[in-house]
Image (cartoon, rainbow, N blue to C red; front, side, top):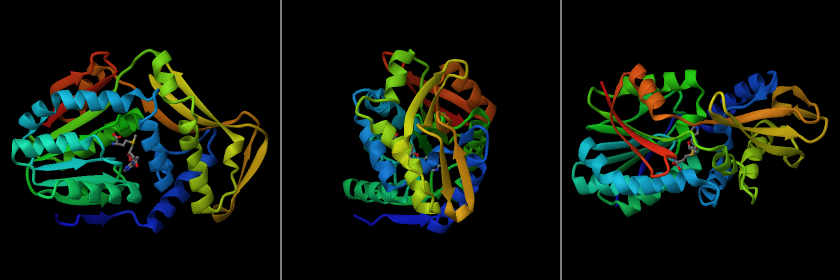
Length: 323
Ligand SMILES: C[S@@+](CC[C@H](N)C(=O)[O-])C[C@H]1O[C@@H](n2cnc3c(N)ncnc32)[C@H](O)[C@@H]1O
């Protein structure tokens, strides 16, 4: 096995600077909000892995079963020599893709990318041990702004799994997809895993589980603010909220202050007031319709080649070629 290499485009100082900027904007806005990438320090990534195993959290299981069924088709069509995976996390499901692409022949390199360096290092090392013939080249970066740093070296497929595309609002999605298009050559592919619009009775519990793991994951952003910016949030005084917005077809995760409080963010010289019941938005998770995905991909310069869905139409995998 060759040890994985790691390119770090987001140092600890860069992360702190980015959080300073996001917290300054988001905590002084009305309503207050923060981008979801701040859930994912080492503890947040571990909590996310626990979420994927919860009985209520159907997306991971559903996407895995779908991948198991169609991964051979994907590998045959894509003939990828380099698999880049954005927001790879633990890369648990990616093993299926790596096996199929290796069996198909041409795969030489796997490039997992993530903002969470702890999760990325662990995933890169495990994949390198399991697939000794592959070159594993990890990239620590923010997929919303540094795609041009991704290594090439052969026909690429970029995978973006787990429904993470739904964490971007429509304008961000358009920029993100156009950014992917810009780094690909004509004929190279994007494999997108996206959650579909389903009944709220199934959807909402996936983001509000009985064991409270998602609530802890949600509150982790407050721990991150405390650690990185010397804030004095009391996370246990914020209640987890998951709401289905039927008009915009997305889940919103929020944190609701359970009492009036004043929080100090020492490193920003910022004092933030929360009225009892006031909510801080921490994540959206948009759900899609197949036609809508196809339209967004076409607008960004992709041609949808194949769409696979699970038997309950809860999740879609879309293979699209850069035009
Ligand atoms: C919903 S999890 C999905 C993980 C994995 N792909 C899966 O399918 O289970 C989102 C992943 O994207 C990463 N992430 C979130 N925002 C990011 C950003 N702006 N740039 C890079 N990675 C990001 C997180 O650290 C996390 O690993």
